[in-house]
Amino acid sequence: MKVSVIITLKKDVLDPQGKVIHQTLDDMGFDGIDEVRQGKYFEIDIKEDDKKKAETKVEEMCKKLLANLVIENYKIIEL
Amino acid sequence: MNSSVITFPGSNCDRDMDVALKKFGFKNKMVWHDDIELPKSDLVVLPGGFSYGDYLRCGSMASKSKIMKSVLNFAKGGGKIMGICNGFQILVESGLLPGILLRNRYLEFICKNIFVKVNDKNNPYFNNIKKDTLELHIAHNEGSYFCSKEQLKEINDNNQVALLYSDKEGNVNDASNPNGSIKNIAGIFNKEKNILGMMPHPERMIDNMLSGEDGSIFFENLINNLK
Figure 1 (cartoon, each protein chain N blue to C red):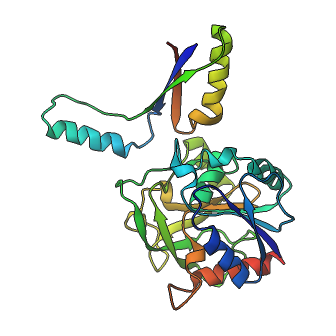
Figure 2 (figure 1 turned 180 degrees about the horizontal axis):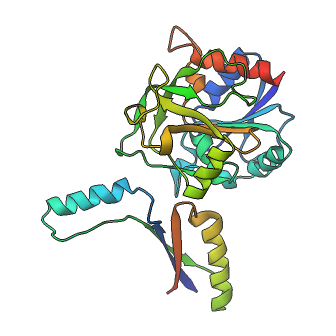
């Protein structure tokens, strides 16, 4: 099955790239943006039909490699 | 004194470190990341560079390479491990040091000489060192040290801050902070102080003709402390 993972930066972590993207969007004329935060997105094709088992595996992947829990949160979504 | 420098795919300061260690009397061996066992070592060095092209997060891939199991065991037994620049990033990603190195605050690669204040001398790396501030070189894109509030409290409570970005006189302020690191942190220890991670490169300051001598002061002192 296919699973996607979204990694987002925690609230109090500085995101200079997000800030520059925000600034650029402002300069391009997009009004009313309060904040931009940049994250990461993964699609993982995993040989596992059991939804729960797949999620458990991907969660372990997130904790051990895909996300760094000091600065990031992860969200697993079944595709 | 025996040392080992680990080469990861994309390391590029491994040879410089080898030259520096040998210059000050270490018998150094180069170790490949895919090896399983560390040679007998008094010091293990994770060098600077761009291991695995900095994919995902700097140091994250290298922290999972084969040799790191051996390095983790070596750490557990109190072995001295030093990570410079990318080596520092690998140490935080492997969980041997707290925190993480983020993108520099102004999003630029910084390559210049800086000054660091030695914050703690009660450890094998800086004990007896003659100077309070060192002129060293930095070259990094992700050097902004960050950690959670709880981690910062622990780091302070245990006196784990090794080096702080400062001016020549040792004043620590925002003007002397090149990359936005929390509290100007340039290097930290683990709780037991057998592991040191730092962004500046002492191995680039070992020749007066080319750079400066403060790296020499560091290495000379280090080998004397380890003897």
